[in-house]
Image (cartoon, rainbow, N blue to C red):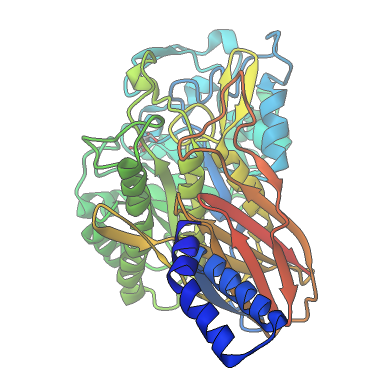
Length: 539
Ligand code: AHR
């Protein structure tokens, strides 16, 4: 309001003089007052303009971009998902019912398991058969705790069936053998007369499961074996050769890809792994407030830290563009997918929790980060066909937190709920002229977007406004479409940039109805509140 009054005060005497001298009537005078007020008010709200070409969509936003990740880490599995059949916490075959219901709601398309770093020290045979006979081990990577192997292959694949989600198994290349990996695939997918199919049947599962996504090792440049890219590529070729397609099952093999901006790793793998031997190559990139050594806090941060985290998050765009450019040199028709199978915010662990458990809270800032990064994945959906946020429950940027029998949905969960309309929809080309959000003498774009058309012709437009102070009015021209009205609107926002949900107050940030939008003359007008995510449906 400050500017509006200054503007009016500065001009008022000049204006009355003009009115008196020109002898206009009172009606005109009042009209001018209104004009000044309106233009003053409009000067308050930064504006953005956008154009959507609804008849020019080519690429599909693969639903697998919405994948999740559950590692044997902290309470990611034990307590968070798996409580066992005899638990007083309501469960289905040992998995919490509250978590199952929440996951079904957002239609998770695939679930990566058992790691992460844990995958390269996991020996699958320890996790099948009668539970009392399963050996215990120490989870040396994550907290040094005892892993009793009560959640193993059967439990995981049955859970995927219950959820209607595709399993994404990560095989052990680091400390396992070619034979072990080969037999795991046989155990899960072979329908014929074979030793592993027989073992599966003895363990109570007659029919094989369908397993499509199969990762050949994890972070082989680090916890997965500290290999060189040349060494990993050579190993990949051996291991991949002996992971077979049984019956109708077709593996979609994903090579362990680069850490963040290691373009050389991508280059060597693309060069040394023959065509058709890998369907995807992964990329891991976490977002820190400053860096790996200065991760920042999940809550209680100031605006500088807010800005830095979101700025770092937006770097995903550049990373993907550069890895894709390397891949294009070897694979111009984009047969191999870039699979961002670990992404999300990584902060200092919550004080008082086991540092090896990577437990952190999740605030409105994380929702904005997730929205921005998903918009980036959509933009690159010609190459990025799969991604997995790390991690699903109780670890890093979780969508769900649990505490004993209590469960809460984090702000990030609501982003996956809001964005599910984009799964398998056609990406519509969209340009936006967004104002900047400036802090620390640097700037990022305030607004990121996605527009998509689903198979019924409904158009969904998502806007993320990271500016913590300013609402932004967006006028978005919709070309080449038959839609006539806004049929739905949803918003995620909160009081403060670090507002978060607690077990005592679980709905501080959630999905709510949004009405501040209209569609007229082929133009969608949206008043996007500060620090918010909005999705509008047009039919
Ligand atoms: O997600 C936590 C860990 O981060 C994973 O185990 C590992 O792959 C990555 O370094």
